[in-house]
Length: 205
Image (tube, rainbow, N blue to C red; front, side, top):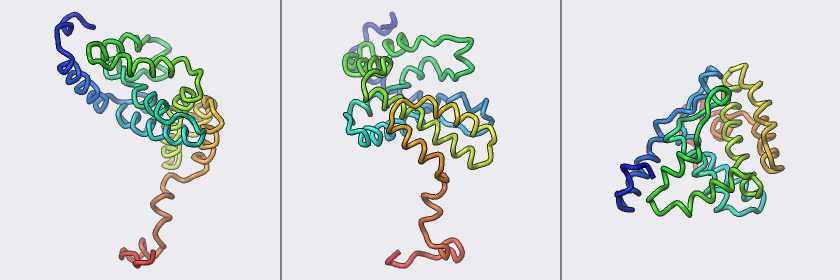
């Protein structure tokens, strides 16, 4: 633990931890500056990654809880390090392991969260591979949206992101994402008259 925090009791450290988790709302994902459009915080990203982990684990008949736990905490260290995109990593090094250990020290969560981090980093279990794919699929979903909105560079980035997928389930989902318009889920639901007349749906719709 960092020197000046060693004398804080467990409940205080848990309060520290929760304040730190909140920093992810204010921590931007930095790759979009190179893409030229789109934006999100690390917290935004982590939520859908966790949902994706649940979906992928269900598809693969894998351990949902372990997969979701890995997804939920996969970028927790970025509250301290910030988000290092692929360009940043050419020139800079992030001490992710050290940052996560400092985050967890004294909270009583060390032996609960850190093993999921190690499993994710090793990427040997099916759950870890699914969690890795969930991370990529969230980005793929964002890239598809940016492509639909007219960013010509998003298609090139998609090609690279699709090659990072590790599981059959991840690839199947990515293939479907690539052919689905990101607005269909809401625009195609109501009949055309809803959008033309701006009136409510019938009871049987």
